[in-house]
Length: 241
Image 1 (cartoon, one colour):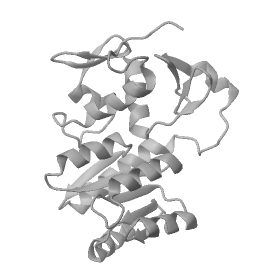
Image 2 (cartoon, helix red, strand yellow):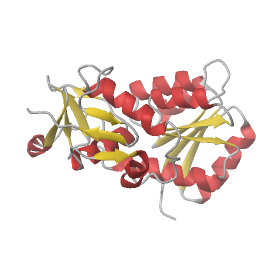
Image 3 (cartoon, one colour):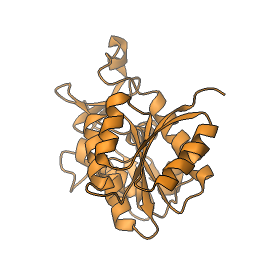
């Protein structure tokens, strides 16, 4: 069986870790396990996984704290595992940079689909520190106070500094760039980004739009680039330059 990628499972329940190791291992993934934040850091020292499956409720350091740590230091996909009804924590998890979430009790097949989805979105991103070919700069599109490089999947400020974005945030910016001046419903956005497993009526899209506005808008409280169209969804309004 071909190697599908590496997943780091961070959960304090050994039965869940073993179940996931067996199931995902049977689908070609290499699995590393950690029961808490210290063990997670130790595993990251050994090898950087493609995706971290991160339980929200962990001893000492919770999943939100560890998600922030991961997003600031490692270019990995992050899937938060939340309990049923933990809506607020799930929202905060997305705000700190998680790529997706799954709710316990979960169907392993759903989790597998989400892992593959996160990995597909990340495959086209260059490795951290990789140089961008000069020709790619011609494909940088203006997004408010930033420019999006379609070829390298990177976002830059006006001084040329890179602004970190998740693979899903890139997908959203790319969709807006391909549909300038058009109001897109949440359902349409999910279809275009191929994330049909999400519920268009939850807040996942809204949270990611809010994160993007903080990065690209001069005034995120009064967005002019990614505007809300009441009763419809969102619209990208290109600016000159």
